[in-house]
Image (cartoon, rainbow, N blue to C red):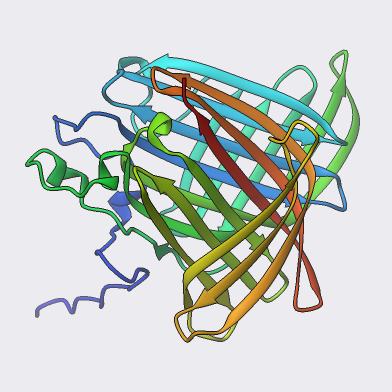
Length: 324
């Protein structure tokens, strides 16, 4: 008797994803500035605990970068390591005694552990909505054949995203003794991308994920080489995803005229409906990235969002590049 095959679960809306896409992609040859990254965050405002972490492979530079930004009661604890690619564990990502990433259920669940002399964090991130494939660029393999557009020389990612629910435990320590335990519960988000990303070639960038009780609003707008790319998605409980096609951004900054403090986003969806979302920064981490093209400055902002009379939490990422 022939065993009946189960139908393939459809979790994307452009190219086909499979479980193996959760892991690193190796073709043996890569275009310049190839970057593969896994990004995770969660916001637990009642506990005043926020996490942003990113693991990235830079194939042309033969190195990996690992960043963990854990904010507790307004104080940031930063872990950053640059590791030669040949020393990276293959798809298990037990980086060292301090940082570990586990893909528990592909396309559905991840676990992250972080510990040092002051904290032990063990957080589980489970899909709140199915994975959405937001890839708008050329397949990275096409770059090896010279098949690309102007802006894709700077950023062209295979890219999927997923809103998450974060649960876990944070233990605070002092001189080896436990002084406090907090039960983590909040909304989070993740993405996985691979392809070209030359930070110094991007003029500006806004990436937003706003988490509300019944929906997540997720979008980006980027400018590079005289071109604008913008895209996004609205995930809602019990309803089909709605694509975002246009984003208008107005940002208020500090006296330094660089650091954002609040933004207003007017988004237009595929049906022509406009929505206004406002963000107010409650924590901002400055991340400078110097390159031969100038200084790229990233502000990773934990924000409170308001929309349609509702309040939510999330991340508003702002980038700009100043050239010499």
